[in-house]
Image (cartoon, rainbow, N blue to C red; front, side):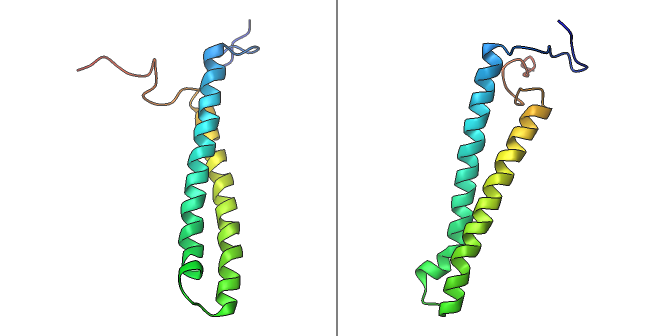
Amino acid sequence: MEHTGQGRRQGRRTQAERDAMTVEIGYALLSAAFAAAVVFGAVAGPALLFALPDPVERALLPCAAVVAVVLFAVRVVSVLVRFHQGGGTRPGGPGRTGPAA
């Protein structure tokens, strides 16, 4: 089999590589959902908790939704790109730790 410049073989992935990618996708989705929920709550919270003028309340909810969706997408992409650039292993993961000093 041919090897790429990074030493990874082309073709079929091992079960460990598929499992690592599955875990990373799950992490990306869950961390993005959490971050989006927090930002949505921070932006839309005042409109939900306080009596604000109608135009402000009508503007905050859609703005919060847009910001949350954009943050979700950016977080998922950044986590998966960082995972891909790292060769498929996360720092501190198996095979990446050194001997105890």
